[in-house]
Amino acid sequence: MSKHHIEMTINSRRHSSDVEARVSLSDFLRGDAGYTGVHVGCEHGVCGACTVIVNGKAVRSCLMLAVQADGAEVVTAEGLAAPDGTLHPVQQVMLDEHALQCGFCTPGIVMTLAALTNGAEKPSEQQLLEALSGHICRCTGYQGIRRAARKLAGADEAKKA
Amino acid sequence: MKPAPFDYVAPVTIDEACAALAEAGGGATVLAGGQTLVPLLNLRMSQPFIIVDINKIADLKGIARADGCTRVGPMTRQCEVIASEALTRDLPVLVEAVRHVGHHQTRNRGTVGGSIALGEPAAELPATAVALGAMIEARSTRGTRHIPAGEFYLGPYMTALEADELVTNITFPDWPKGHITLFREVAQRPGDFALVGMVGALSVEGGKIARAGLAWFGMGPTPIRAKTAEQMLVGQSLDRINPQAVADRAITDTAPFDDHHASAEYRRTVGTRIFARTLREALKIGELA
View: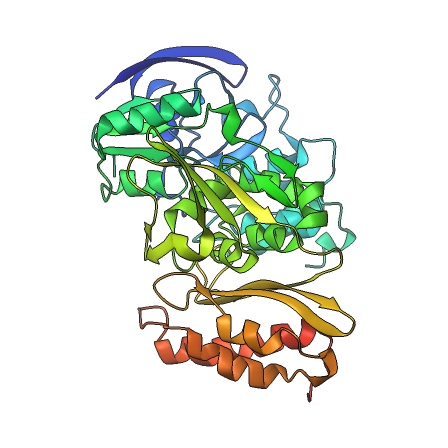
């Protein structure tokens, strides 16, 4: 069993710690760093609830060891809204389209959509909907989430769907 | 749902990684993208005493042209394959296959080499490597060897790779410009393992099939080269190909099994259908042919 010193940026803050090699990034973010917006569901990469952004890309934090994120830039749901509380466009559209109920899967979905829409290139509706297949929601029935994704892609028929 | 304790090293060169694997004497597990290994660790189905993380080895990354082939570094992430203009131009079927591996979020970490070295029989990339005639380079402190993908898979999750060997390169031979690509799988949901799948490429010269590389996945204990179909197709004029007849014979190469997702009979029935349909569509043969 080995222990490792790691340093990473989480939501623009430096964070350093000594971790056992077997600690997942998801447990590290929740337990050590206190970002409980990282929801740990299945712990084997199926449900998508623990999705965070690592170096600009949406990844499942339960499928990465914390030690592997040494030197990385990590964003969790807590890091999306502006300091004055203004919601990130993805959060706003999720709210507007009633894209959540119990909220367990929501942070993961928000992080995937944020990672895909934060870049300079605008993702297509198809890309966003396809990426949502990596998330399991057990209560909304997905229609609100799909509307939110379509709206983010700029689709006019967002209202109709 | 937490892994058993293990030691962890993250070498930065291939030599260091091989030395770590040799030193562990078979007790080490290589961590590539981790999208299969980490679930197994979390579920304690895998309990290595040391993990050799190869994510920091720059020499294992990247896509490069070489003489008559394309070399894909094993640590090339699946998302990088999809974004690669060179692969989209030269090996479109590999790009299409990768699009069906897992989900967007797992493709951001998952690697080409990780999937190929794991040897899941229903996975897309091992079958693609078999179909396209890829060569797998493996290195250890004992030396380097090259294993044809067709000889690499021995059984479910069993490969020709020794415990101290690391996949250091995957080489895909060139296919002629404008070659035909074939890919189809049936899965219960996007991102699930295929219940049935087929993949491959065909090249046409003077109205005849000049070269065929085809494989099945999810149709037996390993990816299976569709040898019978290849033999039926090569040399055949396009206007004389009967996709249904080829598919009916092609299915005899497979050895599907029953599991809780589908019966062997279902796999054979659907396999024959998708093989015929994919061939028909790729060769633009009329529905009734």
